[in-house]
Amino acid sequence: MPDIFTFGIPFFFMLAVVFGALEVGGVFQNRGVKIVISLAIAFFAATFEPAVGFIFGILPYATIFFIIVFFIGFVKKIFTKEGGAKDWTIIAVILILFLILLISAEELTGISFGEQATIFIYAIGLIAILMIFYAAYQKAQEK
Image (cartoon, rainbow, N blue to C red):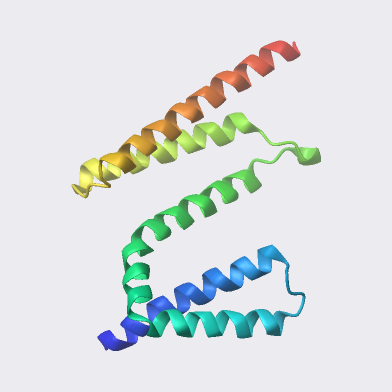
C-alpha cells in the first residue's frame, strides 16, 4: 500500500500542476497534447527518486498555498460588486479573519508553522490592515 502512495501522490500532484500550467499558459490549444505532456512529466517525476523527495518536501507548503489561493479567489468572487468592481474592504476583513484563524490554529494545536511562516502571516496581516485604511481613505474622498 505505501508504494501506491509513494508513486501516486507525486504522479497526481505533478499531473495537476503541469496540466494547470499548460491550461493557464495557453501555449497548446489541443487538450490532448496537454494531457500527453502532463502524463509524461508526471510519470517521470513519480519514478525519479530526487523528484519524489522534493515533491514530498514541498507538498505541505504547496497544500497550504493552494488552499489560501483558492480561499482568496472564492472570497474575491463572492464579494465582487455589480459592474465588476471589487469591494476590497470586505476582502481585506475576511483575509484578516483568515489570518487570525491560522495564527490561532497554530497556537491551539501546538503545530508550529515555523518562525518564517509566522512572520509571513503577520506581514500579510499588516498589508491587509493597510488595505482597510486605504479603502476607508478612498471612501472618505468620495464624499
